[in-house]
Length: 164
Image (cartoon, rainbow, N blue to C red; front, side, top):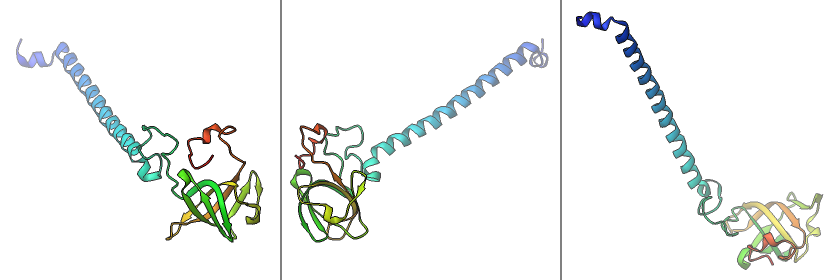
């Protein structure tokens, strides 16, 4: 049997076709692994950079939260120490004092009820969300008055050392 007849034979054609199919399957599998690797790398890097992008937990999601790892990016939670006009002085985490500026258009809520600034009093617990100004004060856009807190009635708040 000469080479030309061997190449044109049915067994050789079946072997060549099988090798081509295996090569295409291997190529598709390799492309799938390449895409999967890059998607996994992107997800891993996104999770590692979450804090920098969205002010999440400082060590990433795989670190111990410990109740203190979230920063107060543009807000504060704590007890009102003093009210001076449109300025609230809050005792927040670790007894740090923060100044909250409330304006006429600031939304103030107690449960589902809208409240005016006069409805806030010292020793109330609040959460204020807004934007920091150049002096480090928070210009509040939203203030939520919380029910009276205690670690016995709300044990999940105990990691926040400034709130007792």
